[in-house]
Image (tube, rainbow, N blue to C red):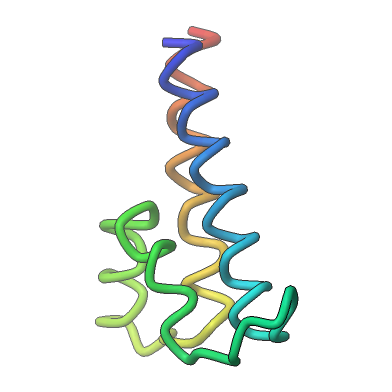
Length: 78
């Protein structure tokens, strides 16, 4: 289960990096409102449940994968 946690953390870090690049226009990249799209599948189902609860926003999209990472960590250490 350690490998699944490490892969998930790597994908999460990559998605956060792509969000920062697209948001701030780093490396000559044009600013893109869809730069955070890679965070959506990593945060499912929590971002969907948060949207239904009325908590939609960028913080939800950025922090929802942390819940899944916590679950994977718990499974790994169990």
